[in-house]
Image (tube, rainbow, N blue to C red):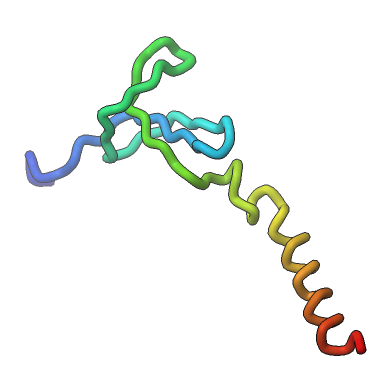
Amino acid sequence: MKQGIHPEYKAVVFQDTSSDFAILTRSTMSSKETIKWEDGNEYPLIKLEVSSASHPFYTGKQHVLQSARQVDKFRERYGK
């Protein structure tokens, strides 16, 4: 690998703003905001709007909404 051309790979906290979900992982992303993690160290904080904790596909809410939409379509077509 060439020296000096790759971004720094460091520990970062990703936090879902729509739920109380946060995960400490490694990334090349950076942020001016920091957060104190459970181990007592401060890490850069990256805020997310959607994660696996709030996305309908992963929470199981998408399937219910999808089937309800199909029932409504059926009733519109053949309900009369």
